[in-house]
Length: 252
Image (cartoon, rainbow, N blue to C red; front, side, top):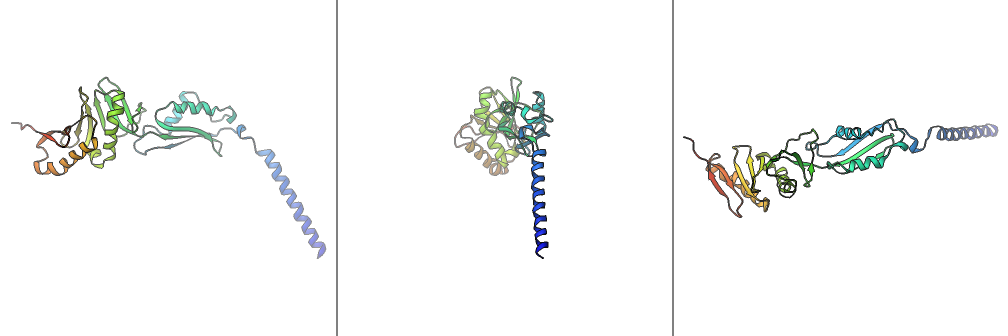
C-alpha cells in the first residue's frame, strides 16, 4: 500500500510538472506583446438617440476611409491612435470620441453623438442641422424628421435664438405634434406654422418662450374649441400676458 501510494504521488507530481511546462510553452509560443497584435477590424460604438441622429456606424467608417485610415490587417504598433483621435475631435457631430484596442484585437471607436433638434434652411441658400447645444451640424446624408426653420437665419442667430425654441418644441409632446415650421422674418421675429389648420403664431423674440408657448397651448386647448378651429388665422403672443388674435377672412 505504501509503495502504491508513493507511485501515485510521483505520478501526480510528474503530471503537475507537465502541465506547468505546457503552460510555460504556451505563454512563450502564443502570447505576443499587445502592440504586435494585428488589428482584426474596426468596431463602432455610438451613444446616440436611436431616432434623431445624423451619424451611424457607416459614417464613422467612411470618415476613416476618406482620410485613408485602414487599421484592419495592420499591426497595432503601426496604427497611430492619436492621429485617429485628432481626426475624431474635428467633427462637430459628437461631444466626445476616442479609440482603443479591445481584447478581440479590434480597434474600437466610441463617440457620444450630438442630438439634432432643428433642420435649417436660410435665405442665403445654406442648409444645416442645429444641435441641442446650439452647434451647427453639417449634412451627412441622414435626414431625421425634425421641425424645419427658414428665413433670415445666421449661425449666431440659430445658436442664440432658435436653439432654446427648438429644444422646447422637441421636448413638448403637444408642440412637437403641432409645429411644422419656424420662420424668421426680416425683422428677426419668430413665427410658428402649425400642421393642422396652418395657423401663424407670432412669438416675437426668444424671450419668455416657455410663457408664450404655454399661453398659446391653453388657447389651443381651451379657446379654439369654443371659438371654432378655423376662426383665427394668426395669433400674436409677443406681448407679455396676452394674445392678439386675427380672424380669418371669409371668402365669398
